[in-house]
Length: 251
Image (cartoon, rainbow, N blue to C red; front, side, top):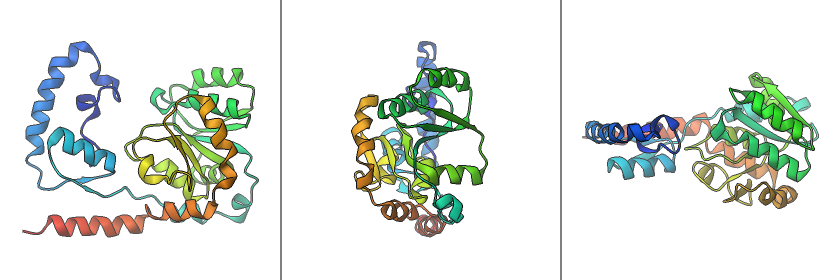
């Protein structure tokens, strides 16, 4: 289960449901959603965040089965990728407002480190304007293929991920490449990142709050990040999903 529909239950996350004109229809949709949820025998949630949402909105229990991440692919990078100097910060994802790439640019600027932004999306023009105002070099990697993305992970000083996601595969991919994560103490990062071990988490969206965290990156052991990422591998997913199906199938 990815999540109860955000535009129905969490309009702050999904603007499709935030209009005042939709307040009444949204309540009707919520009532219908609860009724439909009762017809499901068992739920598997992709994160603790979603499990809590299912309990809150539908009053149903759920078992957490995190999504599979192909960590083996990211770990098995060629030597040329693994031996790069780690000399830039990295942002990865869809270039849309809630992914906070404007904040990522501001964080890199405050930290005085070059930034690479990988992805694509409707915010590209606005982000390029913001990059021009920054005092550090900002490089845009538009729609990098899988191999290129893996190389970018391995060359990064840290992944900057100030986003509230239900789960978030990108931080797991980064950690598989022994790259620490700097992000918000919210949502899926509470499960995928071990604060002060595989990255640093903060409650702040102030770029200045990330500067001391960047300076502490050398305290982290890269192999610890790789070990953490392995908990979300495809083989781990298969084991957990199989166990959940077996349990849910019992009379």
